[in-house]
Image: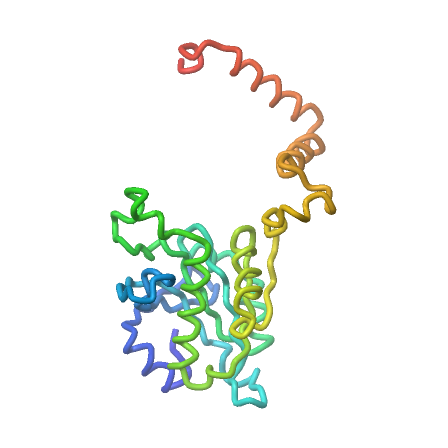
Length: 249
């Protein structure tokens, strides 16, 4: 994939770009790394680590140009728990529909501690002293800092509105990005987000209990195949009643 803007290409060379293509005809991406802040909540700490993200500007060619000199909106997928390329290959809505229609720049940052975004390298998940830096707050700040860097260094991006997208936990990240940084994130689409579960005070008003998720799953099994839930419950009862040695066998 070739970046259309000479200015953008120059910036990406500085960031040590390597080109990667998705399988088949699906649009390709560029894999890049940003020297990300290690701990956003310790202002005196200056440690950084290589934060991976994917970028595609195939449609960011001026077709979505705004009156504020923005070349087109930035469409950010809030990467969640997994390698970021997995979310790229399953996101035709943003990549094949919205970006071409809006002339958007596609930005897919990877969540810290997943994929290649490992603050402690191969030892990142080796103990609590490392995993204490795997928090939703740190992830949100990672994305905001990366976004600020790109808007400051990519010609035509400084005044561009940003819309965050995500599904499941990624949807929660997208919503939190908009709620906590409204100056940076213009809007968010949170699909299948569990955000409402964090609002304990609102549970009663919406009929939510500590068993709400389990109730939804049980109802899916109940309606999918007659007798499915009963079979699961019967098997669970047998397993719980069996001696541990026999279960192991």
